[in-house]
Length: 525
Image (cartoon, rainbow, N blue to C red; front, side, top):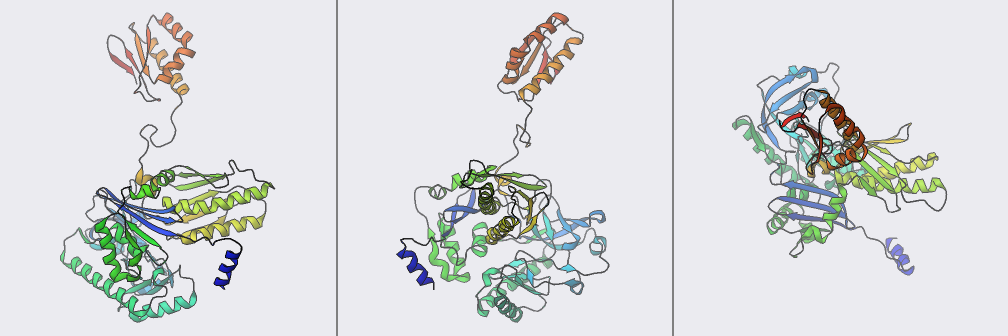
């Protein structure tokens, strides 16, 4: 049937557009950057700097420093500076008290409690107690790392869950026959009293390949247990793989057409890993030897710069505005330059559909997590709203991080949530603006001029006859000279004090100072 379709396309003079997926890795002494491209368009970006440690996935032997019943959590010292946060639901307990789902997330597992009486954190942990924990969220802002006592060790096809006696299959595997087949294989090879989750990469794999993954992960777990017994607290028991190796384990699969690397040592590392993980993919790995930097060759530097901007243009001429705040991310959709050729509803529908696809790409690329609210352009037809939701859900299917699209509110807003594991792209590469303090706003020159004039009037009323010098931003001084000349002359005459204006190229737009000339005393700042 596919051959017939291709023949028809060739007869019509058309070629079928192929979907090219590539991994591009650039490694130097400062950082490792790996880009996932889909038809030459940047879709995901992984960055790891040598001065910034990746903590998610690391396992530690820690000491409980404090137990806080009021927030049902404990703070654990794992030797990384700020104490980690361990919530009550992330502490393992008697397995009989839990329900288990066959459909689970690949990243980790937390069973649902079915207790009638919930255990209290103070009954589960005590100050000074030593405990094994794993990092599930990087430190963000003033918050320390998020910890769990449910250990998970990801392999190529499986995730080993040593603290959970359960077999699960990733919910991203939708075919029921394949789910049943994988569940049976996992049950056969599962070590006693250990849990397994089959990852999406396990689709189509046989018992031997999955058993080999189990053998490797079980050996790794035994090493961690021995270190837990012998090492002092706090200590690191296990460090997750480096950035390149993690991408090989978690991202590189049969859907990736090429993996290009500009570092010979990392190229060799990838080939060695694939010897054991996926030998059939070795031919897709290429070493780049060109003189032009790899990210420049693929126009990735420019695409990364665009990913840091708030405004993103759509093909039709519409655009979206992405605003990231601490509590949530808002995305606004606008028609912009696109006016359409037919009815308004058709114009709006086309813009919204384009926006849905671009929003999914931008959320993945910027690695935005938490609550996301999208303000699409209002549409009258309920059928169009349903098509839009379906398009949005379909666009997010390729996202490795689970996204929940919760529907449209009465105000016409689409609510979504996406798992947050680490800082998103913007705070990873940028810092708050030192000029505006991160608000994105500064007082206008007019506001500062009026405030400065009020302070001048107050200083003139006070005792003293010396001249006053007001220093401010050049725009503020310019306004004072052009608009307040009469006011300044009146102040000088009324109080018998000379007022001098001084523009400073280094002065912040919001700041000014008033100095008593001669005495050199700062009167106002």
